[in-house]
Image 1 (cartoon, rainbow, N blue to C red):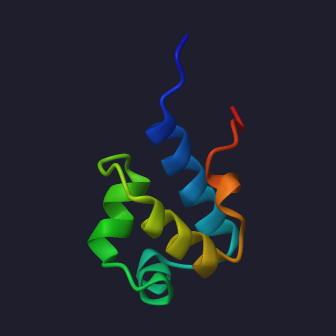
Image 2: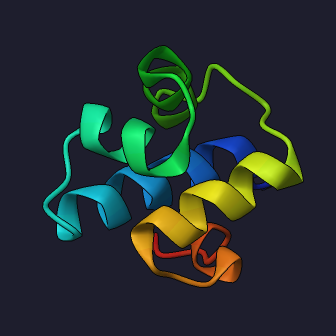
Image 3: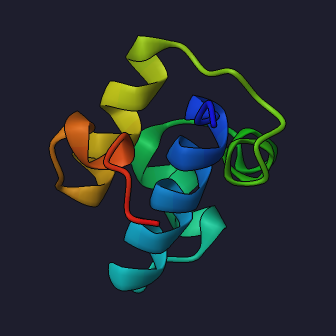
Length: 72
């Protein structure tokens, strides 16, 4: 079965944010992205740009590849 990259990304993003003990608002502030953008991304409603992936990875202090790992 084909994996959905957006679903994988959004699950990992939320997991990494929760592991970092950050709220969506805190992540939005540190990544310089709007809170609604963070929320939509975690819910799989956005197909975000690589620049945004980089900003979120820096804010969470992880490598961008961590968002794409298949953990299921």
